[in-house]
Image (cartoon, rainbow, N blue to C red; front, side, top):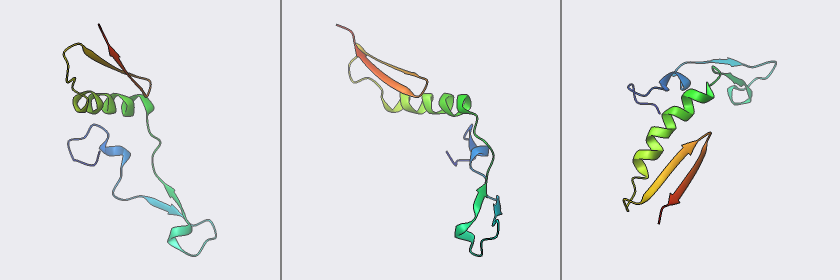
Length: 75
């Protein structure tokens, strides 16, 4: 996620703005970070999930779609 080569590194800014909105402590502030593009996040996670769930059995298939992971055994 935070490696420089990550396709979603811009979702995790090192510097960001705080909106204190009348509050006195930094921990009370609202953190202003960019909105996350859901499709980009899911595409990035898909490759990680698929590589970490490498089938132990060649007859096992894993599908990742729309944030859901489904493992199907074909017999």
